[in-house]
Amino acid sequence: MDPFDSSDSLEGPSKTAATNAEVPVPWSRFSAWLECVCVVTFDLELGQAIELVYPHDVKLTEKEKTSICYLSFPDSYSGCLGDTQFSFRLRQSVGRSSSWFGHEDAYNRDAPVTLQKEHAHFHGYVYFRQVKDASVKRGYFQKSLVVVSRLPFGNLFHSLLQVIAPEYFEKHEPCLETVCNEIDQWPAPVPGQTLNLPVMGVVMQVQIPPKVETSGGSPVKQPQTENLLPAPTVLPSVHELDLFKCFQSVLIHMQMLWELMLLGEPVVVMAPSPTVSSETVLALVSAIAPLRYCGDYRPYFTIHDSEFKEYTTRTQAPPNVILGVTNPFFIKTFHCWPHIIRLGDLKMSGDLPKQVKVKKLAKLKTLDTKTGIYTAYKTFLHKDKSFIKRLLKGIQKKRPSEVQSAILRRHLLEQTESFILPLERYLESLMPPQRSMSPWKTPPQIRSFSQDEFMKTLEQAGPQLTLKGDWTGLYRRFFRSPNFDGWYRLRHREMTQKVECLHLEAICAADLLTWNKDKSEVEIVDLILKLREKLMKARKHQLPVKEELLEKLEQSIQTIISSLPEDLQTLLHRQ
Image 1: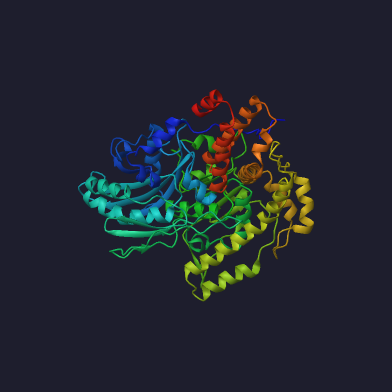
Image 2: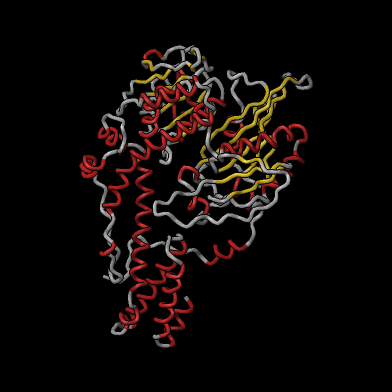
């Protein structure tokens, strides 16, 4: 077998790409945060129409423009007067070229999986204004300012819209141009750093959470502090919602909702407004953090959506998707879906928010269907009654919503981590032992994942939780979900990189010059080419290997080349 041979060789970056990377791209800082800003208005002849896209050279497909138009206005059933904020998520058109995705993206490498930039979807953040205006034929001024981004930073972008939208509705395009130029001066979104983002006389200060490394990496360098005038507005999070506000009418059903999200079950959220719809869907998706939700989700979905037919067909089982809707028409359309959460305006029962009930799907018939969770689902695990009591007691004691949210988030996080921990332990056992890593052989393979073998480990290393129930049944169902598939693919890629790193370290520790002494020129040249490939792959994919090790390997390659005849040296230096 050839020394240093590797089965998953990858091509290195071309010289052209390297050259292009050095040329500053117009709007490059802006596009690190946003794709574009759109203004959507109501045209009497056309209906919803895009009035403006900024920067002007951003290329949205007609399909994307149509989707943004329909998703940027609440439907007529919501009756949203005044200012309304909500979110949507739309599928990118197939074959579109991305402004940033042509090379390995440093942001995604350092960010938690739940906050990474999207490959195939855009997030839309909407500030919609509807006010009476006698000068308009319909009697109302209706317009939306929409921020389109690949980043799931709801809290940041809604805060940004609160600053710029009221000003834009007064001053129009010149104001928008100024804002976009200011965003084009923002620092790059680097996880772990405190970032100051100035816009329209306000400085928003944020920190994107870094990826939590199990091995414990070196602390992220903080930029030098500066005396900011005006004093910055500190956002506690770029993405976190007020979970307690989102879930206050379903608190007693949190165990069921957590399981439905974990298993990637098809869910429809029917809400009274796009705000409640989008916040509830995003809160559900975040309920299984730090695990990434790998199904599709649409915080606000309309009958005009390009995926409407795909998601409402009755010829196949409902897809793994969470849809947030406000149009009562959907009750009829989705009556065959297995889980429907019907929300209304919050009602109180004494001091406590009235909790919706679990109801049979057969009762979901009429457009005036009452609030409730319509499902036949039975949870695998029992409810944590002490946790529910703690939250309800907090309401009676008038505990602040942010504190209640922190308690709820911590509970969900601990439950997800307890569920994932046995899987992580089992994955570690699949890694080849470090002593089997030889510099003269192909890196050993990672053992295959066996569900039955994993199940046997649960007897000794099951979830460390007080919650009782059918954990085995929950794992078996999880293995059939898109969330398991997404989690396993990601972890397997990380494990493969770790094997590559260990193999590189073994090569760097080996005495390559001694190995060369009794080898033919053909074998030595083959060795050099393989070493170069390993080095290139390590740098291209930014494997977590110390730079001094890579430099040592580079020196070894040069030393080996210098031991060859001059004609071969010239040939190898040209490559």
